[in-house]
Length: 84
Picture 1: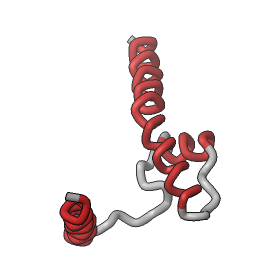
Picture 2 (picture 1 turned 135 degrees about the horizontal axis):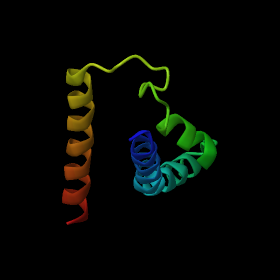
Picture 3 (picture 1 turned 45 degrees about the vertical axis):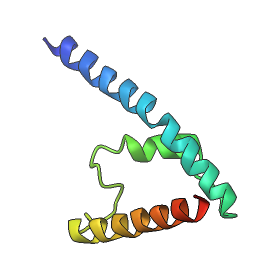
């Protein structure tokens, strides 16, 4: 039974790596476009696979996250209207 637990843990880690690869590529490109130093892939994975899930940061307020997303959506809508 302990081997099953290890296999599940390994599978979860591999799935996290696979699912975040595109996110790292997008993050890398955005950093380069903004003239910032991008986070290396190994460091990115280390932060993603951090057991605490917080990467040392305090949890964000859900209302603040929603405000940020509203701003992003509004900017996207404005941009698509300009292009149309």
